[in-house]
Length: 147
Image 1 (cartoon, rainbow, N blue to C red):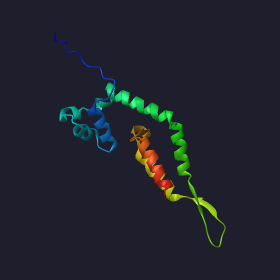
Image 2: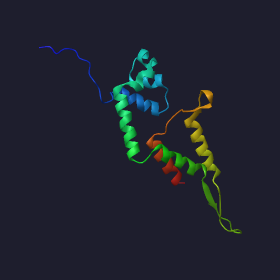
Image 3: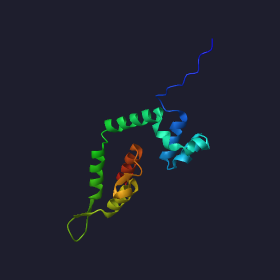
Image 4: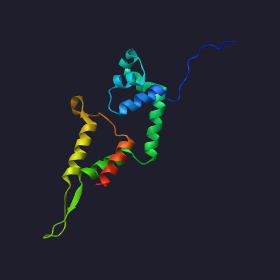
């Protein structure tokens, strides 16, 4: 007995969807990411619907929950950026007492990171250009601590 053809409802991302998300994380644009993941050129050119797919939505929802459960909320990230932009360091001298001064290197890196994340949209409203992943946030923090 043949089974009727019924559309499959996906709650998990497909391999191509996961590969596309990984390619996007590496900095590719949507068309490049989808093509490299195995989508046809025609499908890749209609990439704007990619994030509307159920598997991708489920994956991103799970990622958001994971990040939130880890305590990385928008408020926490804003506080962290404030801490970095106000960074100071202690300067020691043989002739003067130690003093705290602005850490311009850290402050400039923070500004560059913020500038990369934000892009001014129409009407001067900021829009998100790129979101940091948990790995980028943690690994960059670990790099700074190793200096």
